[in-house]
Image (tube, rainbow, N blue to C red):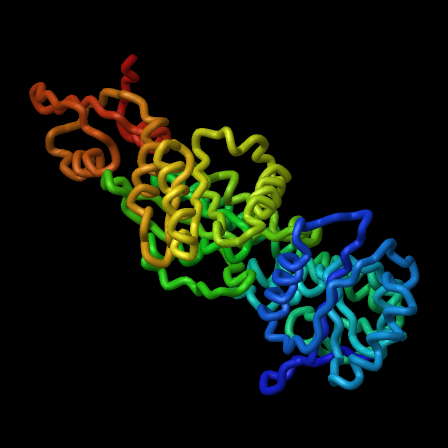
Length: 436
């Protein structure tokens, strides 16, 4: 069966169905789950002509849905000119193939749709390689299907374009060869990233990482704080490749602010594994900022999904970490009473702040909170600097809190309050005395 190509001038007529299996309750509100599925479809520029939330007692092994459902929707799809069905669930290769045969249209599941979006969004070399690896890993498990042929796919392993048909053995060999090649290239990128991390450690700029559910407003907040001009739109997965900018805190201290890929419920395993190297930037961060969309009725479930991914990365019990900040975003979209309640509640917290990344309300409080978090790791030290070394003296005044100075001959003795990164940098230059 041929792929359906996405025509830039004509959107693909699409049906989106959400199975609501009674034995596996997901969102408390199926409408919210459907809204997210439609957001995913919008992100890939699909023309959704039909939607339905389908209550299921059980999943059918052969085609996921019952024959009755297939017989009912088939004429509807034909009359609406629908040629793509998106099932917001995980389909087995057999279920996907049988649905395609029965409906005579292209069928993709939630994982394939998210992978397709990532394929569109990836811009950097590393991002493209990670997405392609995820695509290939996913496709390899679906070689029972006759339409897979990697040699004739459109630019970089998409699901919705490029027809072709070949033997399973040939496909498997092509996939395996590509996976080996991509992993080698990613290993090179990983080494480059490690060198970049080492370079950043030598330059003592603390790293502050933004994390959160997709479309929570991370990139909008990033742009407001860093004036970065990063692509930010009301789309799921608007940002894929990590971006970093240097900004100044109220104390004058400089930090590196990092914007990362958004998380989502049921994030495909292939993507978690492929993007682990990118997400490991979060592990290196001095402060982690969890951005939440408080205008979304499912924000507590979204929070749970984000914390689950962070837990899988190795950040267990992150909520109780002193370097964790929760940003309650989009308060400009809340009723005035809710907005007032959040602002009053967070005013008594050391780990939460209510903000609007659009208007900037609450962002000064956020910057002050980051300042305090970083200062909590400061130590009192004493250093001796040659009075003629104006460059080092200027650097110390810029990157540490100078508590006192004393001139002794050609030396200036400074008592400082400095963070771990600054102290590490200084150890390579001058002798340091730690003060109790």
